[in-house]
Amino acid sequence: MIRILAAAAAMAAALIATVAEARWLRAETDSFIIYSEGNEKSLREFASTLQRFDVALRLLLEVKEQGESNRLPIYLLASTGEVAKLYTGSRSSSFVGFYRTERDGSFAVSHRENGGRSRGTSASQETLFHEYAHHFMKRYRTGAYPAWIIEGFAEYYSTIDFDRDGRALIGKPAYGRQYGLVQLPQIPVETLLATDPHSLKTVGQVDVYYGRAWLLTHMLFHDAPREGQLVAYARAINAGTEAGQAARQAFGDLDQLDKDLAAYLRRPLNYRITKDAIPVPTNISVTALPPGEDAVIPLRLARLSARPGDDSLAVRDSLLGLTKAHAGDAAVWFEYAAAEWALDKDARDLAAVRSALDRVIAIKPDHVRGNVLLGELSMHELDMKGDYSDASWQKAREPVALANRTDPDDPLPLYVYFQSFIDQGKIPPDIAIQGLEQAFRLAPENIEMRVAHAFALANRGQFTSAIRLAQSIAFDPHMGAQARPLLEQLLRMRDQRYGGRSTDAAE
Image 1 (cartoon, one colour):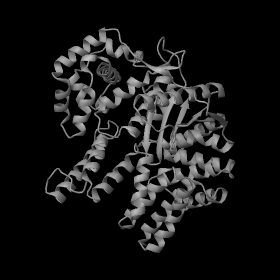
Image 2 (cartoon, helix red, strand yellow; image 1 turned 180 degrees about the vertical axis):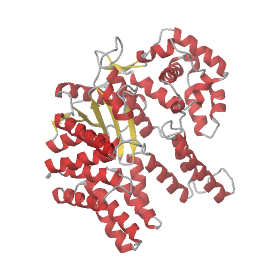
Image 3 (cartoon, helix red, strand yellow; image 1 turned 45 degrees about the vertical axis):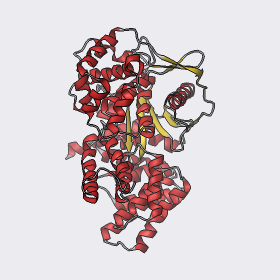
Image 4 (cartoon, one colour; image 1 turned 45 degrees about the horizontal axis):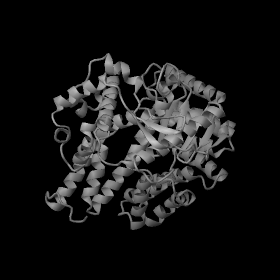
C-alpha cells in the first residue's frame, strides 16, 4: 500500500510540475479551438492551415455549411512521444495522434514535431488532417462504412496541401506509408476489406493496413476504369447488402482487384488540383490562457484521455491541489469536480463534487458544464434516495435548462435533459425528444447521442432510420464490437413490431 501511495504521489508531483511549466495559447477559428504551448506565430499558421483544410473538405465533399457552431477542440503537444504516452502510457508507442468522441464532447490530440520527413507534407500536418478527417466524416457522412474506408478516407485526405497560388492539391502520396507498402508483406485485398484494424497485433501489420487502405482508396478515386465503384460499394452496404457481396458486385473479381492494386502501386500517382484558390482565413484569434486554465490543461487532457487502469486518483489529487492555488477560478474547480465525479462509484466523494460545483456556480453562475454536472449530481442523489417525484426531478433539471439557455450550441445539456426522463422512468416529452434530435444534429459523431437518437426513432416506429444509424456505429472500427448488440436489439424491436417485415410502416 505504501508503494502504491508513493507512486501516486510521484505521478501527482510530475503532473503538477508539468502544469507549472505550461504556457498554453488558445487559437480560435470558424471550426476549431486549438490549444498549444508553441509560439503564437506557429500556432496562428497552424490554425490557418487547418481552417483552410476544413474549407477544402467542404468544397470537395459538397458540404454547404461553413464553420461549426459546435467547434472541435484540438490539443497540440510538443512531440509524438508525449502523444503516445498520453494515449498508451508509453512514449515508445507508435501512436502519433488520436481523435475521441466522448459523451462530454469530441476532441483531437496531435503534435508539433515535423522531423524525419524528407518530402511531402509535414508529419504533424498529416497527423492532424487524418484525425480531423475522421471527425468530418462522422459529422457529415453518417452512413455505414467498413473500417478500411474510414481509415482510407482519413489517409487519403491527410496529404492535402496547398500550392503557391492557394489551390488545394488532393491525392498526393502518403510518403509515411512507403515502407509498409513496399517492404512488408501485403494484406490481400479480400482480407483488407474484412479486417478490423484493432485486431492487428504488430506495428508492421497496422502500417501495412493503413497503407493498403490509402492505396485502394486512391486507386478507386483516381483510376478511370474504376470510377464510381467506391460509391456503388458504399451505397450497397447502406442498402443492407452484406459487405463481401457488395464488394464483389461493385469491384468485380477481388483477386483481379488485388492484382490491379499491385500494378497501381508501381505507377506514377496523379493528384487533383482545385480550380480556385482556397482562401486564407482571416477570422483567427490567438490569446494566452488565464493562469488557472493554463495550469489545468494537462490535467484536463489526462482526465479526458484516461484508460482503464490509469491512476485517476492522482489526476484528481493534482486538481484538488490546483484549487488551492487558483481558488477564484471556476475552470479549475469544475475540472476537479469532473475528475471526482468520474471516479468509480465506490471511490468518489459526492459531497466533494457538490462542494466544488457550489464554488463553480458562485464564481460563474452560468458556467455551462458546471450546471450540467450539477443537474446530473442532483438526479443521481434523487435516484439513490428512491425519489422519482415530478417536482424533485423538475427542480434537478433547472441547472441543465440554464446551461442550454446559456449555450444552445452545446449538445450535452440537450442530451442530459432527454436522458433525465429515462432515468426518472418517464417517457420523454416531445420537447425532450426535439432536444435530443438537436443534440444529434450538433454532434452526430457522438456515439452515445447517436445510440439514444436511434432508440428514440425506433420507439416512434421509425426503424429504417434507427437501424441505419446503428449500422453506422457497428461498422466503426473504434466502436463496432460494442455497437453490434445494439443493432441486434433494434432488429429484434422491428421484428416484434412488424412481424419480420423489412418495410417501415411508420416512415
